[in-house]
Length: 118
Image (tube, rainbow, N blue to C red):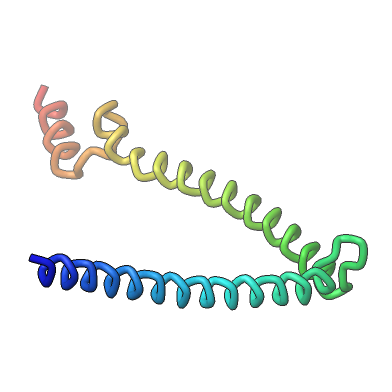
């Protein structure tokens, strides 16, 4: 009975040591990641500091703003063109519905022949 209790305690202790070892490794990894992020933040702060923005970034920002404005204008023109094309594509069928389409020559000739006979 004592052997079972000692062996069970030994198994539990080994499992706890394994978990503690994994947690220790995880803490080391997280510490390294945190250190890397701090270094990265220090390096980028000097580059992207709002008080000292490099001219290249300012030039890129103004170019992007102009490009967005031009894209909005082109998008509006495209929508208007699509609307015009939709109206133009409907015109042939609308003229048939309204009876404004050209009459066939055969039909016109038959009507003229009937009119002459009268």
